[in-house]
Image (cartoon, rainbow, N blue to C red; front, side):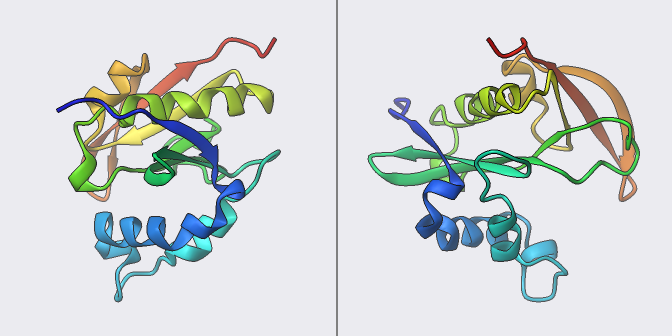
Length: 161
């Protein structure tokens, strides 16, 4: 499949896309964002709608249509509270996976982190190990989360010019 021609925008600049992204959250994490879960996708997305502070969300778009989302979060990971900030809430709809969206989407967060003065980013994942490695992240630890092993990753950023 051919890679898509992507653009990246802050969620704060495209609030009309929140309902679409909320549906992705509900489909991707039904135990958390589904009808019986404790999460509220739209509430979380509104929290990510900043331009000059964390939390901050970035949307990947193709031909003016959203096709992926990721955020730099303010919540700390319970097993590693000393590390900050964390990348998470990354999702690409199943129908668009393996089209070259994930790597540039994660990379699109980096200039925003640099602009806000961060020199490192962290992420925890059960499923996206290969994606983070392709993005140049280093696994620094493994932890148990909800009884399952999860990789802890770090990305060192260059200081903003």
